[in-house]
Length: 532
Image (cartoon, rainbow, N blue to C red; front, side):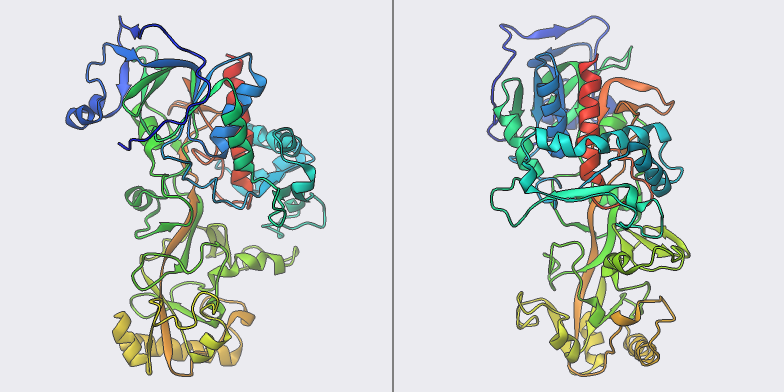
C-alpha cells in the first residue's frame, strides 16, 4: 500500500481517545473476511471482526478526489449544517480521469426534455427515476458551476436547440441538451476540477488526505450498515455515510478482460483507476450494472515498443491514409475509427442503423451500436504517399522509423515479415482495398469514401495499434438518491456513489455526460447524507 504525506486542512474532530465499537461486532469487509487473512495481515487490517478501533471519525467520508468526489465534499461543506467531511485520495494527487479530461459538461434548460433524450440513449438499461434525478441535475449544472467560482467569461456555452445535433443527430431529441466547457484560450480560466479542488482545500470542514488508498469498507454484520472505511492502515468512522467516487477500472487489465473481453488495452488518462472500490463494494454485497460500458474501445497508434500513444487526444486519427489489419493480415472492422467525428456530417434524417463510425466507445455493428471486442494488437498500414499526406504527424516526428514509431519495407512481403503477419493475406487485403478505392466504395465495412486512400507506392509502413479507452462506466447499482443497492434493490445503509463509479450510462453515451454525472450525483449523494 502506497505511503505518502497527508495533505490535511482543518481537522474538525480531535478525540482525546480512540473510539471503540464492541458488542455484536463489525465486519471489516476486506481480505480477512474473505479468507485471505495472510494478505490482510500484511496490510494491517484487523482480523478480529468483533472489535474495531477507530483512528478518527467524521460525519461523511468521500472516497476519491475527482470531480465526483469533490462535488460531493464541497456540497457537504456548502449546504450542510457544519458536518465534517474526510476526502481521501489514492495517489499523491488525483490520478483518474478528472484532472486530464477536457471538462465538457452536459446541461439542460428543460429537465423533462433532457429526460426524454436520456431515455432514448440508455434504452432499458437504466430505470427512469435514476435518469430523472440525473436530468434534474443537468438543469442545475450551469448556475452551480458559476456558484463554485467558474466565471461566466470563462465559459463557452453551446445551448440546447432544435437545430443542435451533438452526438446523435439521428434522434430528434438530440437538441434537448446543451454543453459547456471552460475557455482553454483564456489563461485565467479554471478547469472545473481545479476550481473544486481549491474550494475543498480552503474549507474548514473538509479534511483532504492524499496517498490514502481505500482498502475496505467497515460493515455492521447484523444491520449491513456501512460504518466507515479502512484506508492507509487506519480506520475512519463515517457517522452519516460513505460516498464512493472511485471512477472506473480502466487501469486494471484483468477486470477489463473479465467484463469486456478485451486484452492489452490502455487508458488515455491517469492510471489510478484499478477497480479498488468495485472490489470493496462487491465484498459487502452490492449489486452491479453496466460493467461492459464506457468510452471504449478503438485501436490507437502506439510506438513499436508499445509504451506510449502517438496522441492522447481521443478523437485523433490519421487512418484515412491507410487501413488497419489484424495479426492475420486482414481487415476486420470499419477501421477509420476517428469516425466519431462523422456525426457532425450525419444528416438528422438519416438511418442510425446504416450510419458508420465510432461514437465515444460504441460502433455500428449489424445495425446496432455496441462495444467491439477488439484485438490486443493490430497494424495501421500505409504507403509513401500516405506518409507525405499525413499518416504520421510531422510535428511529432519527421522520421517515424528512426524514432521508433513505425516499421518500413520496400515491399509488402518484407513488411509482413517485420510485423509477423501472413504475407499472402496482407497482399490480398491490400489488393482488395485498392480495388475498393478504385470503385469509390468500401463494400466490406462501408468506410466513408472521403476516408479511402490506396496503398500503392513503396516504401510501405506499419504502425502498431492497441485498444484505447477513456474510461469504464460500470459499478454498483445506484438509486435516484445516489444510494448503492444490494441485489434485491434495497439500499445499503450508509453507502452512496457518484460519477463513473456505477454510471447511468450503459448503452449509447453522449459526450460530456460523465462530467455532468460527476457533478449531478456528487450533489445528490451529499444532499442525501445531509438529510440523514
